[in-house]
Length: 66
Image 1 (tube, rainbow, N blue to C red):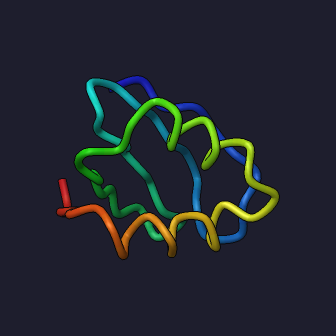
Image 2 (cartoon, one colour):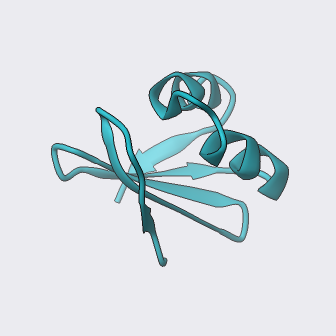
């Protein structure tokens, strides 16, 4: 999955495809969040705080390390 670099204290890059959000953290770990709609992804990527937005998403979407 193609990811784009982001400005965040916790997150290095993010990508989205086929309702899967992929997040690379500063520590090098990569997680995939399942069932994330394109609208949710757009709201996430446009959020002023990606860390806070991700905290909301991980309460409602299953995720796993890659």
